[in-house]
Length: 200
Length: 311
Image (tube, rainbow over the protein chains, first blue to last red):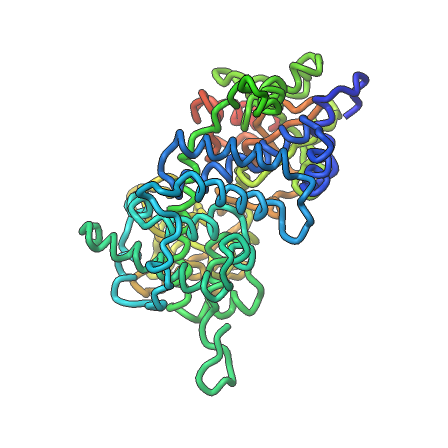
């Protein structure tokens, strides 16, 4: 960009212009108080974070508040990012903590460890046939009715662009537990489809 | 892959591999070979893909993030106010920035009728650099197109190389005996479903629409493994029109007419909502791009016009 003004707006796109957006560099600039870098960060990650939080909470206003609190935490804590994880998984971890804090004491529990004792993976069973017959719209509806922890792990694996090890890092559990949780989530989804009589 | 009980040969795909396929990541040769021969794993990929599409569908339904709140009296969210001054979050960012920079609208970026703030760039794809593209316009000017995870890339045309084993496919064409002559093939959409992201095709008389998974892909055609376990032979030709509605950046081809829509991001830059590569003059434009306050018909019309003008 040959911007003779050299203004802040131009700087917003300087990172992306070099190819893949260098999130770590963006965070360094945020740590130095660069508001344009913060705006670019918001643009890069905001929607994914919002989608994940909304998937877990199911409440739009609450999700947007959590997104803003998350971005505020990024603004304040960018300097503490040590590069031990991807920026995406780092910001989602922050959003998860913010979500947990906001939901603490509410009826909706983000992590019910007893429930998640990660019911042994059932593996493919008769219920998977419900998935074979289900329509996409039905699956979406059934996902909405899953336990928050199941929605969360599905969102991390399929909606956030994270690898399974990154999902494990966000959730603070071993990769093997992520796998069994995913399988349990899919089993619950299939049972939900069966319960609703949506298999034909 | 999992080893069988004897540990001497691979058995089924690991969950990571199934999820990678459901997430649209490229499979290595070994995985493709396995999928071509293992119905159980194809079904598992299909099931996980449906789950993944369900999750992503919900994410797509997520509202745009609301404009940041004004700072409180304590200035707790002071940066949010600054950000609000610089951008309209998540979608309007580029447009707002271009206004702040004082640049007049770039001639290389044209408006899209009925879509406030949305801009379009068309030309020939020069190169792909990471997540950004460079399109050279008819006037010889370069436009840098920035893509992100949510940008929708669509490619269409005579692209037999994009039909690969293991991919979900919908084939449309006349059937003769046990063979279908593919007039069109849509690759990569979920094998089941009628919601967003799926495709309904009503074949003309004498034609059939076959859904399933690609196997035995070659330059002459491929087989479709249908959900009921049958195998339908499909022949392709140079006139087979292949549509990849959820293409990856790696499937975009340099030197091909390319249209991008999104928001202006400064001097000759576009923050892309979607990128389309179709042959110039395409009658039917295949897009799955959405923009706030803008109908898909408006976007499709603008893209079709751009493609016609390039033809």
